[in-house]
Length: 112
Length: 117
Image (cartoon, rainbow over all chains, first blue to last red; front, side):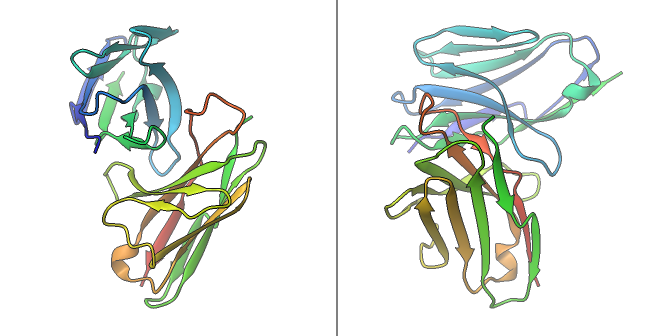
């Protein structure tokens, strides 16, 4: 089945710096790759997603890139702010193309 | 739009009892819902896919007789943890895909924290 690897597990940056989180997936049939932000004790919130027919997508300070050949995708956050501090999860669709398989998460800490 | 609720938000029960958790899509219909379990400081682990009007599809290693799923309507899926034990204590989160959407974007409920004593 699908396996999603996420790195790094923790990331500390200064306010204003950029943060990059990388994920790799195993199933070449996966075609949908969302990123979720989860604050402690709360539900995951979709922050951006990308489909396999697109190489890059941007929404204000957040961007995602996808390399289907290499089977990896990355989240880029620019001009980080303390409120960006949270756990970020990448995910990819499973073999059935419906459910999501999540990476292990990255704890991002932005210090002011 | 695309709001998913869960009830209860937290529950404490004695070992051996059963607990039912409800997942509702409030402003959309969802043919497909999912149940995840999340242990502290860990990722979301898919337990099962719940399809309205049919049997749920369970992931490998998840006991279908222990975690009963019923998706009786397009806005409600329930997860019943039967004969709960302390190792079942976890954060249970559901998600739903709007039937009228792209078919991929999942919206998550706020989660239910279960503590089995």
